[in-house]
Length: 107
Image (cartoon, rainbow, N blue to C red; front, side):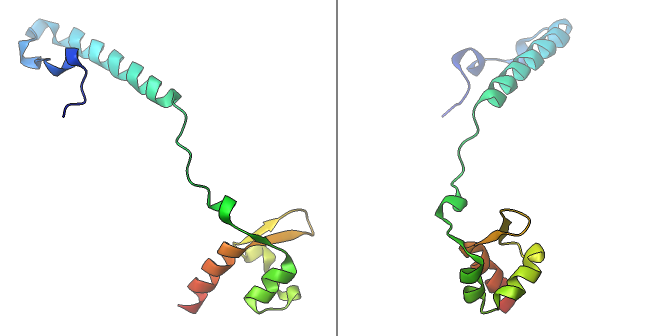
């Protein structure tokens, strides 16, 4: 299976006259630039969102899951990767983030 369109499929670079090679290279570079620009304009494929499946926990629920007092969670919130700040004083925690973090702590 070939991915090249029909005009390029039968292209023979050895058939180009030596004097015409610079012009052919310029034309091919222009074609490459146009194709790259078209490719760059395509919308990025949507990645599966793990955040959509994730449950956000209140600090109390997160502390219970961590088996730590809520105060410990509040004191350490800045260093914990699963904490999402809502405001300066409020935050929520990702359940899957907590489970991943706990798995790295036990090993």
